[in-house]
Length: 382
Image (cartoon, rainbow, N blue to C red; front, side, top):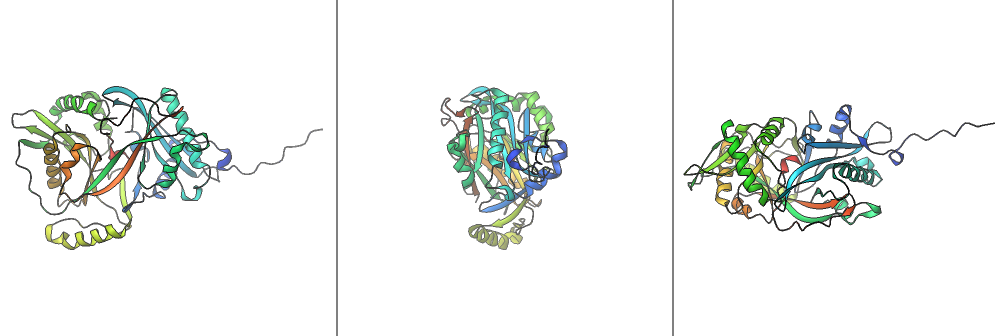
């Protein structure tokens, strides 16, 4: 005689492994992103309307998003994204993994969700490139809950910090004189693409983890990026016509919107002072908490490290072109060790630091040292 097994309790996150996200998870992932603001001097909520996956598609040729189900079995309690990238490591092309978008709903923090998503990440990185696949991740400075994971608790991979990216938010305020140096700056045209790719191939190996691009792959990436086109790029040329550098000025509001949730006391004072003079100089005031922050983000910065004047010329031309168009800030991300950072002096940029870590699916990274070159990291993709 047999008896029926006792009824199971409703599924919880404790017995549900993360799974690959599906298109019908989009609405739940948008809600999750809105519930997980980034805390800092300016705390921001990143809305990913209308398509959460639009950003993930740009992260690499192969990518996955993992989701952990909540107590109902349907609500998304957390997510993480993993992508395979071909980049320069110490000047040589190789494949790495990038892990980002780790979000845990506030109602599920302190439980097993984050550990389960880390296990998903390890499995995904291993599937991309095996146990020794170098895997890059970034953590906003001051995020103690993530920093405490660096030691690899409970058998999870340990990760080592090797660089810090500083996101410089330059207020677009009064008119600034464009430099009258040795370069001419103008917006790119389709016929510039081949030369841009050749310049990237010269400069990118000098940057740790800069993506490997040729003209077709760069064109493909630009075409896939919402709100980006060849005329979003600004090119600097020496007087003789030789290309000196370029960057993109990217308005991402069609798929990624920033909303201010709070200002620190220091930034609240900065905002009050800035907004007092904004009407006098034709600047867009910084928004109050709960309102959107319109910004332009520099992407694909391609300037040799010694050419600080070239980067400054590019930034000041972008700055001038965006003044009076409703944008509050221009965001520029550079490694704190990058000599190009000198180009931002005097622009009143407000800093936000993002720490970069390296690991592998097998555990702690034991490959070649990475500190010898400044890190290239696209803050537009965070």
